[in-house]
Length: 198
Image (cartoon, rainbow, N blue to C red; front, side, top):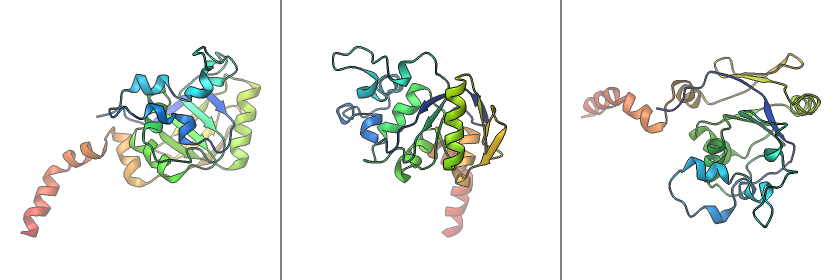
């Protein structure tokens, strides 16, 4: 059982770059790990942007800027393109993000996020721009993501948008279930169905 997801209200980390691919999210050299060690992947999220070649912190990168923080990453259009590596979603979750907001996600990465209890929220280009503007005007700007109602609200402006999510994934997030948990929870129904087929 994972942490249940209902309503999250948080400040945001802005990453207004378009076409951020999975190799930028977690570089290929970290893919040798086959188990999901959250701290390891979280520590290496955006590794080549967060750190200089000598291993020191890149003070200009947003994750190293104490001005910004929170459980919501606000990203530019076409987030998660490139290879299908699930490690990218592991890194996002391992860092502590519960929500990623963008105007477009690569499909495989979007599903990988959902499978790792990170909610990808697709918004319009206009809403995304306004969100970036609000965050830069006041880094303490909060955003409310309401999964039951499927709405995202910019608390600085009061504007909201509705987002789409697969009904099964919504159920799993709200109940803290991964695919295995869901099957175990429905074991009796599955066994009854199989018995009926015999």
